[in-house]
Image (cartoon, rainbow, N blue to C red; front, top):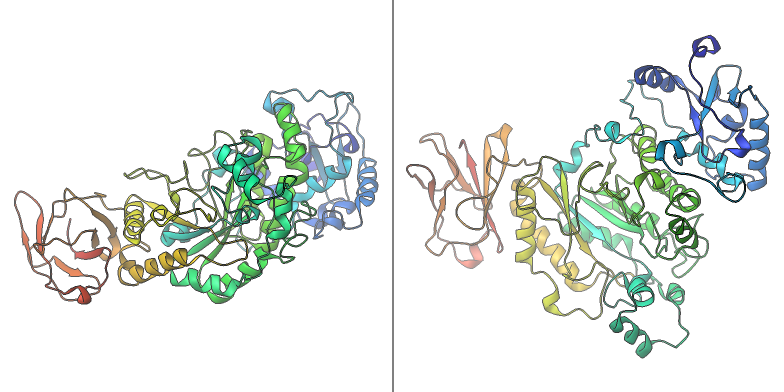
Length: 580
């Protein structure tokens, strides 16, 4: 291997102990050759200290001091002249490139000058663990899977796993310490302490002692009535195909026992339970849903994030010590098949090192074959980079988009988290929710419908009712939703009629949200063929009479049904066979 590498360029670097952002990387003349070499790389080819730790669950298996020793030993392995650093083993050689995990000043066009003589102010105890995070072992597949480089061009070329487009409908769950005050919004802490919005300030003055702090809500987040099996059963009954839980929102409280959020997580404070694990197990054991996790990159008041922000994100203490370790921990421990990133804090994606993390996620993680990601990986990436686009909260373009997208929206019109101050009119009706689903799917999107549980872990009755109503509608009309494709026209000239299709079955579905009093429905888009075209009402089953109109369109005669005989109550579907 030494002969193989001879003649290739090695990047300038400091010694390992003075190089907090680096990773193992072989500089090769072509990407294809580099990928071929990296595919062949196995733990046994690494220096002994790397091989010993690559399988460890903990980043500090023997305490931080052991990492200092390992960093010193690795740095002593080889120190070539002229500042180049090569770590060699008996089976191969590696170059340490000052680039990957945190991004180099050269690549980002920024200065990393500090008072300590140019070194970034990160503990060297963190350098080697973070160096190894992208190198966690993955099973070696018989057939070589495509490899993705840590660039948006490469990552954006990854095909979206087919299951996501087929699923169409998911459940979003916003749950955290903000569920304790349950007033106004899940942004309660920010609106109260940072913005000092009068309604929030007054709420605290009227209901809590003068010196009460947001952290004091932590022990009150009890989850004492949380039953993960019941949640899973409700989600299954809704007809959803995936669910996404807020593992950590902008307040920073983790719903699992995060190693990097000491005393501000659900295992140490409040429930004293791993809520993520309980729901993950229930979803996978009791349902056919895919399990996903939401994760906020930033935290409003974390001192390291605020310090990085004060320096215009020219340093990266917060992602190194908090965000990236937690992301790797979540993926390896809970294997989410949706990773829903959010909260860039106005920091660019290279501050978060999003591309390096995503390259590991797609290439080496335990969910690399099935995981889907969204587009919120740093300032400027939304609606531009990522697996699927969200573009904005409650995004609803009303027309077909060229890229897969998702409409994340709330049953509560005003909040993602539970609100005790919500009124009945603040909740979307089932008719409005069905309309939202139909229009979204017709335009090529998925609907991610949000609920906000209470601080004690119950799903408010109105949310459960809406979910079960949606499930009842999908039992009849799911054929027109799941595994469908957008048709050549998304909507008809007749108001409130939307189309989906299944080309292989030569089926077009016309979903109409209002039952015509005349029992005749005009469809202006389909072109029918006498003797070939057949039209049925889903849930009814019998062929319907229709008339072809000129210059185009079909007039469908609907069956005469009483209200109780209706196959469903909030929207109906015609299945049209052999129309163009």
